Image (cartoon, rainbow, N blue to C red; front, side, top):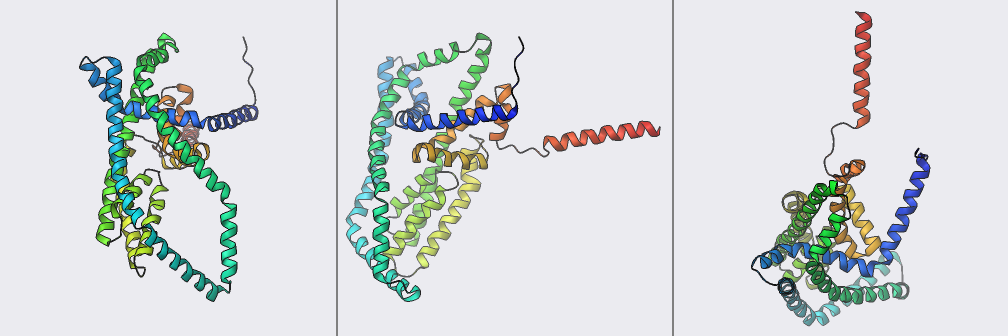
Length: 371
């Protein structure tokens, strides 16, 4: 049977249309897929503890329940530590609000004197901006309620995934032919290792960066140093953009609580030094080695995840792409895509290699003609 070959532009068009509908479907199903994706990541992370409890001859439901309980206790401890800091911040919020209002008044007077824009026009502009952002505020409230529902669904998904782990693994083996069983086993093993290492690496990076941020802010005398440092460490998980966003909050707090601008400059310098250490020592040591995705793809993937699933997508897309790379590297037709995602940059591209080969052939022909 002769397989009909279609022109490249038809294939490319079909692929682009398929990707368009795939992204739209994934975006429409975000309320289901986002908590499920987080549950898959956390269940893989908790899997070693689950296996150890099974090794103690525990019944499977009890082992799953204890594993889930351990994860919830750890999460509750982190939330408690953050909430105590948030309570301290909330107690000082009225004072901060007054100082922030004074800063806004000073800024309005400065703009009025320097640029000739009256205070009434500035107030009108701010009101229009607030009115135009009502939809965004509604979306933010919807996101908060969506996050709460996600927090409820994730433990349920984790319980089910661990309980039915054997069933799911059997399905993945049986859905492929027996001759590919070895390759499927390699992909599953490397996927588990990559995700576990990636999440553990991110946690280590987050702890170290949070500690460095907090120590720097304590030395500089910025209020709520631990809270701001931890928030900065969490936001820093977002590749390439989280570090810059993390600087804004301590600079704002320093502006409201301190006179002058020297502290703000010191905070910026301290955070830039921490980002340098993170980018060149911490991240390559604990995260980058585990998930070898190049910087260009990482940046595109982060923005794509944000467009598709919001902030949750920014966290989820890198491990998903890491799993895709593991699969691409094992399938012959997809190996070029695996190389594109990776961080190994060849010295020469294929055009240069072919050019050198043609040059050698021409040199051989000329040599034979001379001889």
